[in-house]
Image (cartoon, rainbow, N blue to C red; front, side, top):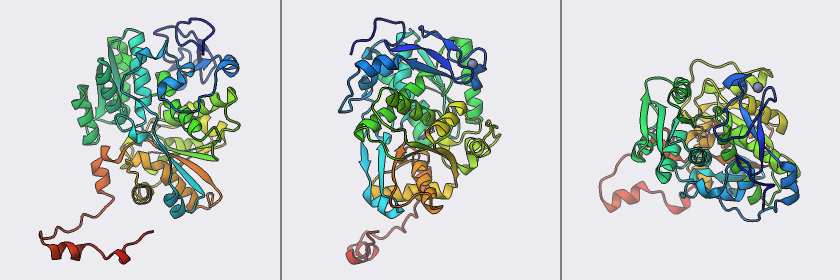
Amino acid sequence: MQGPGPRAVGAMVTELVCVSCGERVAAAPRHAMTCTTCGPDRGTLDYAYDLAALRRRWARPDAPGGLATWLPLLPLRDGGSLPRLAVGPTPLVDAPRLANHLGVGRILLKLDSFLPSLSLKDRASALAVAQAGEWGCPTIVAASTGNAASSLATLAAASGCRAVLLVPQDAPMGKLAQIALHGGILIPIQGTYDQAFDLSTEVAARQGWYIRSTAVNPVLAEGKKTAALETALQMSWDVDDAWFVGVGDGCIFGALWKGLSELSAVGWIRKIPALMGVQAEGAAPLAQAWEARANVVPWHATTTFADSIAVGHPRDWVKALRAARSSGGAIMAVPDTLISEAMTLMARHAGVLAEPAGAASVAGILAGVDCGRLGRSDRVVAMVTGHGLKDAASLRRTFVMPTPVPPTLEAVIAAAPHDEERSRG
Ligand SMILES: Cc1ncc(COP(=O)(O)O)c(C=O)c1O
Ligand SMILES: [Zn+2]
């Protein structure tokens, strides 16, 4: 498709718009990242596109082809700046045994745990690396609970730019190892993710580095929304009743809604599914705000084993609340025990290994079934946002290590149950 003519950023981008006051920002290279009137907490920006032109002139693709499929809805000059490491498409799999076990009609699992760094964050990092390249910024800095940083290190390695990563020192070892092995400059912070976040914005301003911390760079949501675009395409544009996803800062959740609402505006889907955000009870400021129909009040401390969503001060709260409201969805909180149960059930009944934040979506479905809101007539989508092997310590909590046996045939036969005794649940 040809755009209406060359523009500074992305052929179909018209401007950026503040989510709180509606102020418009020109979409020039190195444009402002947040609204100067509202500030970085409330004044996050949305890229706006010429959706009317896209509606007239963009042919609906019928097979997913990775990020480049969505270039007309991305703020890049062209696809040439995207990393060569393929970021999607990822499988959308039907999980009938899991659905049957849980008592719902259908569950589709979107396996973004299969992206190059094993989390959905690669969709955002790819866009950040591409935009930083187009803007001539050689260094990218990010604060992260672990996945965004390991993702940025991965894609920066593929593209040859410098990545500086601020993560809590107690982030899972798998994620720290990814950062270090890919050559990222790993700065473990003796503090929380929320502290690392504030530091990243300060150091970016001081050093003139490109920032890939969530929410305060609008391009990240553009990358994450491709998970929604791709899922809708894989569902032949007939999207199901409710989509579930784990929520920390709220960026993924808000981005799914943005993608779906753009698909609706170009006329490719008829309805937007209810978006269900799932937080861990020990880190649930967004669920609390949703319940109270109020603005978010940051928590000073979080307690959950779901490290990726252990966020006390959600940075994308305005967009997250908008996504729940506009889609007729909600943001809920579930206990860690339910997340752990979801991890086990996904592994046993779907063959899918998810880290806790990646299993939070299915924990939300479990909670919906438990309280009678979901049943056999419901068809749902669960986003699996991170792979289980990224966080071996959390996996270790979900199973009992069998007692080692002597290396004899008798001991092995005694340790394995007979076929007929094996549960097929
Ligand atoms: C695996 C995984 N799931 C979910 C989330 C939540 O995303 P957000 O912080 O955008 O709400 C994250 C964020 O780090 C993550 O790594
Ligand atoms: Zn504003």
